[in-house]
Length: 172
Image (cartoon, rainbow, N blue to C red; front, side):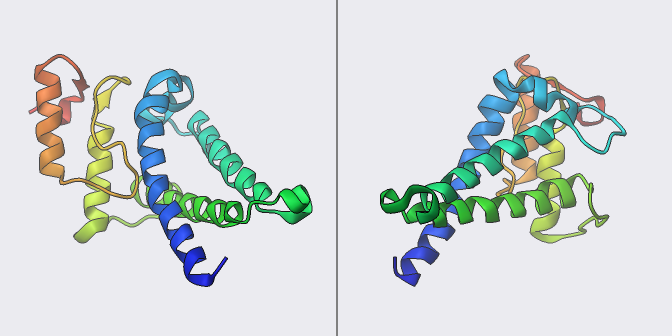
């Protein structure tokens, strides 16, 4: 593969992974995978959460793609784009870890952004955590954050429609 093709494939994979993450968060983590994800939405003082098991799923996706692109594993049946897709998934996982676990939940470092896109990311994810339980909710993405005012309006509409139970601090 040419270097421009590799760069486009890696960047495209990173962007596509936000869509995969959104859909996984919305339909798996807040669906049949709630047993793993629930503790992420509840207060606790543990270092690890069951929710961290989803990182292993992401790592398995990346490793699988690396394997498809490895001539040492597949020999002549190798699929070279697999290496670069696996690399894109890996890069997305690093970004996710820094943004979601680090910046938003402050598991690895303490910094509260006062302005800009980092503040918007934190606000959007805090609004995601404003609901009690797996029903309803907003902002299922991890890197691309919508306007917090729009998200608040959606939460209000969900609460009024009986779709979501919103924590007291945000119920107004």
